[in-house]
Amino acid sequence: MQDVEIEAIGIMSGTSLDGVDIVDCHFMYSNGVWGYDFSDCKVYPYTPEMLERLKHSHELNGHDLAQLDVDYGRFLGGLLKKFVGEHNCHPRFVASHGYTVFHEPQKGLTLQIGSGAHIAAVSGIDTICDFRTKDVAFGGNGAPLVPIGDKLLYGDSFDYCLNLGGFANISFDDEQEHRIAYDICPMNIVANTLTRRIGLEFDKGGELGRKGMVDKELLAKLNALPYYKQQPPKSLGREFVDAEILPLFGQRTDIENLLATYYQHAAYQISRAIVGKEEKSVLVTGGGAFNEYFIECLKNSTHHYIEIPSEQEIDFKEAIIFAFLGVLRYFGFPNCLKTVTGAACDNIGGAIYLAK
Image (cartoon, rainbow, N blue to C red):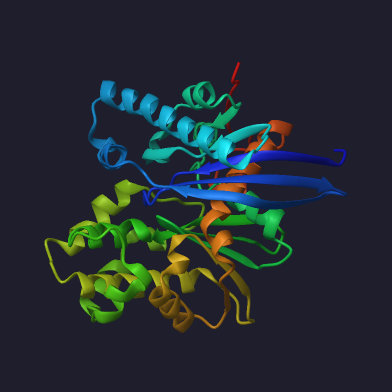
C-alpha cells in the first residue's frame, strides 16, 4: 500500500452511558507504519430521555427497539453535525460504535443500535457502523475490537493495553507476535449500577469505595465465578452482569463496602491477566483510569508499570481506534483478528452507509 493520509471521525458510545465521545483524527501510513494525531474532540451528554431509553433498551419489544435504533441514529447524526460545525472538520467518513443492547455471540447474536443510515442522512457524512456482526457470523466473539488499534497504533510503545470502560479488557502480543485480547471482568458497568442505588451516576475518584471495607466472603464468591477460569478468546456483556454479578449483591445497601470489594476483585483479576516476572509497561485508558482509588488498588496488586496517559488520551482512545477501524474498513484491510475473537478467520467488519 502506498503512503496515505486520511481524516476520519470516531464516535464511541459505551455501555457505561457516560456520554458520547466524538474525535476528529488524521491517520498517516508510511513505510508499513501507522500513526495518528488529533486535536478536536468532545464528550456530549445524553438527554435525560435518551439516557432512560438506552438504559431500558434490552427490555423493549421488537417494534420499540427498532424505533430506538432509528431515533438513536438521528441523535448521533445530530451530535455529529454539531461537532463538525463547531470544529470545521472535513472527514472522509465517520465510524460509529453504536450502543450495545445484546451481546450473546455463543448464539450468533450481537446488536449495536444507532442506525448508520440515519447518522449519514442527518449529518451528511458517509458512515461506517456495525463492526461486530460479521465476526460473530464467522463464529467469533465480535469483541473486543480495539486490539488491532492497540497493536498498530500503540504496540511499539507498550507491552499491554488495558481499557477500563464498562468492561475491563486487555490486549498484548504473544511470543509469536499474534495479538491476544479479551474481556477480563465487568468494570464501570458494575460500579455505576451500585452508585445509582444511592442516586449517583458514578463513584468520582473512587472515594466511596475508599471509605468501604472489603467483604472477604463476597470477594471469594466473585473470584470463583466460572468465567475467570475460561481461556481466551472470550468476551462479556450485560447479560453476565445481570446473571452472575448483581445476584451476589442482593438488596444490600452498604454501597461503600460493595464498591470496595468489587474494586479489589477487578484489580485482582486484572493482575492475573498481566503475566511475566519482568516488569511490563501497561497503558491504562477508559473512564476507570480516573478512578484514583481503583488505580491504587491495581498498582498494589501488580509489580508491572502502570502508565496513565493524558486526560484526552484516556477519554478518547476508544473513539480514536474506532475511527481507525473505519480507516481499515475503508481501505479493505482486516480490522477484526481471529486470535482475539476466536473467529474462523481475520475479517473486515463494518457496514457502509453513503450520505448520498
